[in-house]
Image (cartoon, rainbow, N blue to C red):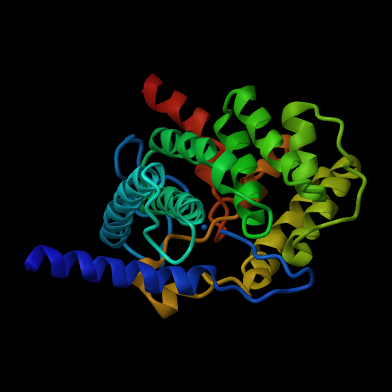
Amino acid sequence: MAKETGAKEIENLLLQWMKQKIMLTTQDNGLTPFPVNPLTSRQCTIMEARDKFSTKENFATLIRLQTEFIDDCKKDIQDLKDSEDKGIQLYSLPNKEVIQNKHETILMYEYDNLLATYSMGESIDKILPLYKEIVSLMPIAWNKDNGYILMVNMLSIGILLGVEDTIFCQLAMVSQKEKLNDFLINYFLHYTCKIDVSVNSVNFLFSRPYAATKEVISFADKDKTLSVDRLKKYLSQEWYRGHSGCGWHNMHKINISVHSGYWSFESGALVKVLKLDDSSLKGLPYYPYDMVHWNEIKYDVNEA
């Protein structure tokens, strides 16, 4: 009975979190965005939490609960497939539709676990397998109607981690299958895959706050100092406020136990792509400074 009660509590907690986190108000486009301090130690194990709104213990608990829920979803998918093969309908919705919904749920929780893993202070090396798992799920579980921010972040994190070209090509195929046309995503795809996509379009599927990134890019051609200054303004004044319609906004105040972190990975990716000096951005909220420089930090540790 205790085991059943615990499982029920986990399920209720996560269902409540899901409603809070993905029920987003539409802004200027009607699309639903999907969602996340520098290193202070030279060790490549768990360090001080990067996201200062919560604790390592809270993040670890969230990851554990969400991983259990993911495992349950995977078991449900297998049961649904077995039932479908036998011609048995388990729910009011068709089995295949429920399976698809569960794939999308798994994708959401895997992504949230990545955020929480980074936020709690784990080494960047531990982010990479989580990242690759999410990318592998996207062909079957991602769509542009609820995954814009996820696509932006997967491209951005891939740039920061220096992943292989095949991963970017996979993301490109997923994006193109959904006929996604967005300036920032096109810009990153053009950089990573050399795909012939329009990077001159003013189109942003989620212009608030992402339209500011176009100014960061255009300024870099003229004066990289201006570009950094614009990025600093974006991080300090626009990025978090621009996501006020997202279900995860202010989650650290609403329910700290399900807060996974706030991170502007696209800011770091722009620094890498544009070769900007980000020394003035170090320590700014939401800026993933150590992920931008993780290879340099890793090299320094090995040389010590």
